[in-house]
Structures are given as C-alpha cells and as structure tokens.
Length: 465
Image 1 (cartoon, rainbow, N blue to C red):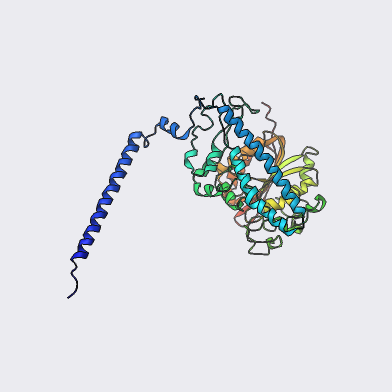
Image 2 (cartoon, rainbow, N blue to C red):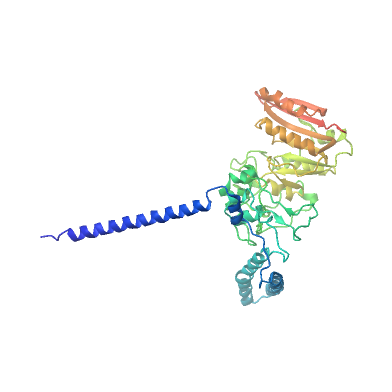
C-alpha cells in the first residue's frame, strides 16, 4: 500500500502556521512604525520638523573642537591636491610626446585610473562648505519650495541658494546669496529632468542635447546648469574664414550628427523627403538662400533689405531675428555692417551649428523665455517663419510686449511673411496695431485659397514719459 499522507499534511499545516505568524509580526511592526511616525508629526505640516530634517543647525564651537584648525587643515589638503594634480598633468603631457609604446600605456593608465578619479575626489572635496569659525546661518541650506520635488542630488544642490563666501556681506549685485532658477514646468517633467541631471561631476556629459531641448520646449526653461564636459565632434576642423563661411555649407565633420536623421549637410536638401525637418525647407541650400531679401519678387509681401535700411540710413546697427532658419537674414545684414543675433532651435536639423559655422551668432532660446536683452536696446527686430497662424493670441500678446520692451524708440519691427487664415486676419492685425507704431510698409498677399501673407515694417514711437 502507498505511504500515509499524514506526515506531509502535518508539515503543510506547520508551514502555513509559520507563514501566518510571520505575517502577523510584519503587520505589528509596520503598525508600530506608522504610529511612531505619526506621533513624531512626520505626516503633518510641521515647520519645526522640516527645519530639523532639511536644514543645518547653527554650528557652535564646542569645547575640545577647533573649527578653525579643521578649516585650515582642509585648505592645506586642497593645496597639496592642486600641486599633485599639476605634476601628474605635466607628466602625462611629456608622455604624449614620447614614441615609446609602454609610456603610452602608462599615460592611458594615469589618465583613466589615477587622474580622473583624483579629479572627481578633488572637486567633491572643494564643494564641501565648511562653516566659518564665527558660526553660520541657516539661509544657504534652508529648505526651498522646489527641493523636495526632486531626489537627484545635483538638482537639489543647484536649486539651493548659494551664500557669498564672506557670509553676511553683499556681493556686486547687492545680495547676500545667489539664487539659481529653473522653469516651473520642470516639476511636471521630473523624470526627464532627473535623467538629464544624472551624470558624474567633471566627466563627459551624455550626448543628450535633444533631451535638453525637449525640456526647454515643454516649459522647463531655464534649465539647470550642469557640471560635466560637453562633447564635440571627434573630427572637428577649423571653420572657414568669414569671407567664405557666409555663403558656403560648413564642413560635415564639425557637427555631431548622432541625434539627427541626416548624417551630413547634403542630406538636408529639400529634395530629400527623409531630411528630418519640415520648417524652413531649403534653407540649407545656399543657392536658394543667396537670393532672399535682395532680388525683386512678384509677391507684395516681400521687402528688400536695401529698401528697409534706406528708411533709417545709418541708424540700424544691431538687431534680433526671431524665426526658424540658418542665419541668412543675419548674413545679409552683416554685409551691410549690421549685427544680427538669430534665435534658433534644432528642430530636426543642426540650425544652431549651421548659424555659428557661418560666422554668425545663434541664440538658443525657446518662445517660453523672456528675451535676455535690456529695455530699449535693439535697433530692429525681424521675424519670419516662426510666429504664424498657429499661435495663441494671449501667448502672442506676451511675445509682442517683450519685443516692444527691448526695441528702442525709433526702432523697426519687421513682420516678414506672417501667414494665417483669412478669417483670423483681423485678430492678428489688431495684435500688431495695438502698439500704435508708425506704418512704413504694410502689405497683404494671397498664400492659398484660405490663407494670406501679412508683411509690415513698423516704427516704435518715442514714448518720452
């Protein structure tokens, strides 16, 4: 006959009993911990507890502890580390000139296994903020509203206000500390921002400019600064001289193509359906670009640069071009001895790199951000291809008031080929006319059956109040 199932049944009951006992123990311990946390007030909005957790209490010189000696000792260690790092760097440079293979291996070992960790440790030690012997206040480490939204230490360090080195004294800006800012939408993109700020201090950054741009466009702007080294093309070449660079495609080797669909400038041609971008089609073709703003056009909405500058001879010296492009407007104005800063985002193509390699000034900024210029400073603002009929009227209102702020009295606002649906034209016309600028040019041309172009050249009034 088969064996009796009684022993197996007893063993099963014993295991089930043990599991039940362990489960009860876990529940009891959990409830006990929750009760203790609740008793301590951790689930309440208690300012005293928050200060206890997130701030550094005032340091006092206790008996037997010489704070000044500790600070002097750390400074001495830092000086020795500086000297040692300089010696290592000189040794590595000497090895670079050597043709001996063994020395090259030693050089590689020194760079990877000694100098890199040494540098990180050095930087980490320098970032320790020891209190002054006279004592410190809580303001630098004081809890800030955004700090508890993020777990990555680099973000928390960046957000925390930084006290001046001489605590209590004001700096050149008239403040006792410096506040680093980030866009309010960064809280909504916590995962992406923490990924962006996850790096080794002093090491190379990831090639993640596209992640940074995604954050910017979605309102996490300004972005926090990072303490890592930006990567460049491994085959970077000297840019062309200015007399060639304005109207010549740059060297393909000067761009990191990893985050684009194309791998060279020829691929960005308007004839290629897989070029990776839709705005500014053809603006990487220099033959097409060279005819803009200089040749007569059958379209009434096209103004020539010479005609515009003739209205203010010698008065237009600096300006801003807000749009999507490769800097052709700035290149044409440079030929007229006018300096133009060009705003650009890399929307599927290397617009910023292209503008810079042409010898012009790109401004990497989104529509979300206030212009980084002081009031009444620009002679001209030109816009084309960016702010069209898709834009919300309230957003457009804020943008136009910001442009009005930076445009000087007598400065020119050039609206170039703004297009929208016919039924929306009156709304947009009001947006431009509300500032009571003087009309120098005003033209409306058909774009399609339902859409129209609007171009205007307007002059800001003095407003001497």
